Length: 281
Image (spheres, rainbow, N blue to C red):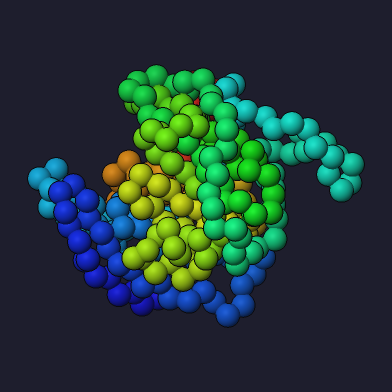
């Protein structure tokens, strides 16, 4: 997969990259996606990302995808809805809700999902807001519940005490996690070329491609829960200043900042930042 990487702007503490992502395969399976890339911190694209070093210069690195969580006690549960088979969606795991068809575009406007959580974990507080593009199929509350469950888990960036996380719905959140249609992702990720296929992180925004959210990628072998955990943790990791890494060795768990959307490189799919932490802590 050839990529052209150009450094467009380095100003103050921000570095902007332009990544040309190759078009998706002509025939995609039911669970196949591409890579994400982003100007600041990068994304799941196959090119290395640039992020500011402590001295303000740009440093470079490269990234990937995710796995099934145990729900923290503070994670929200959307109202029960009857599925087509009469089964209450309360019984469907949070990370398997709103499995919808892929789309090309929606209305183009983002809306914050209202609601706040308790502070999850210990340590310095990082707040996050969740936004969903208007007109997408599925329930915006389902995406917000998934983001909250993942980021509130001790295996995520909180690392069982390293930082605490709290979902808010104001304009001053430290991190914003967005779900958008491919056309909107292309616009929000510019000047990166996400090609309608991949997600990205741009500044403090982790922008998730709706088609990747509903279809994942082939290497995850239909394990949609793991992929969803991965893509949230991966893109949020970029907003926190983490760059791409490679698979450490054949058969090992892939680091969350590996570009798992593109290739597992011999590693095993993994969505957690600290998979060995106790999810019940």
